[in-house]
Image (tube, rainbow, N blue to C red; front, side, top):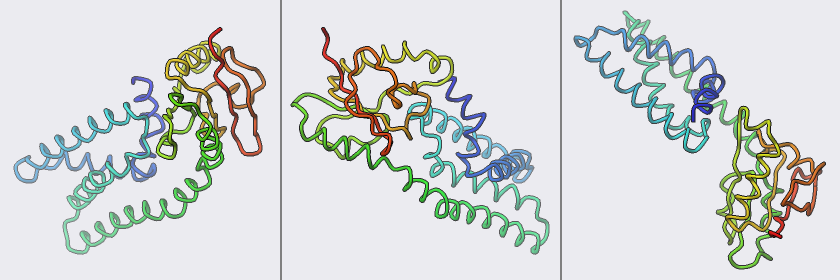
Length: 240
């Protein structure tokens, strides 16, 4: 969990809040809310409680599911609110308030444009369609009680048999490919996985050998290395 929180602090916060500019605006708004002396300091106290609750919730959920970007939906209302309150606290005239509201609306609109122009096309281009087609083909001829594994999450909803995403690693653990593959094979056998489908686009920090198939890890047998479609299929060898 510590490594994931450090990764969030280094590069995930800007994605979580929409962009670096949104992050800076949210931090500035939060600082102004906390420094506010309105309502005899009650606004500052309420802001601290709100921001602390958001930070605790985000850290807990993201550390459990490793899904920083998806939490944008959760953080957006609080970020927009703190930014708006912070900016409006500086406005001392009706014209300044209109300008401040326009800035906040522009920031929120920017997030909407970012989703439509960049996020949705990226999601479409990086959807694991080829992996899913191969998993469905394997699923049709899988024996009862067996399961499938892969590098992409949430594909089990499309399959009749059980499916699970294999462990991802980061930091020093990602450098020891042999130890990772040994743990991987043990986990695959423990969960009765018959095949492992590795997507090149979803490899992340896992050992490269699982995708390029230049070597065969102990306990796995190469079925297909379809580099054109961007996936590799491994059969889990039985225990001898």
